[in-house]
Image (cartoon, rainbow, N blue to C red):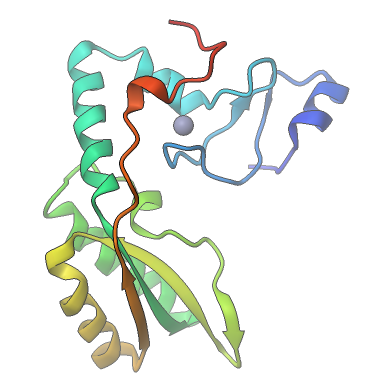
Length: 162
Ligand SMILES: [Zn+2]
């Protein structure tokens, strides 16, 4: 998707725009120009009560995930992402990839390697880091505690259709 800021979309009269940044629910989805609301959030919000319950419990589980960092060669990134995704799906089958890799671009570039953030469930952090070391000669950095969970009910923008 083409990156268009909201101000540009307003100027061009476009109904939607796309910043390339995830929304507060970690969707990489276009947003409506008028409200600034994420299209995927609206879709989930309009889903059946069961969908909404699942969404809530999924968000709760995702909020409990921990972040770990691995220094990888770019060539190994896609492969390791698949490993992290598959590992997380053992706990949460519907988890989306954006909830598993928390940095689109590597940071702290050093030669051909960069540091990438991933998220996993607490019990898997050590084995995933060991795997990265054995498979890719990766360097692993510290694991962070999960962020404080924000209840979804209070997350909606004021002008959200309800
Ligand atoms: Zn969203």
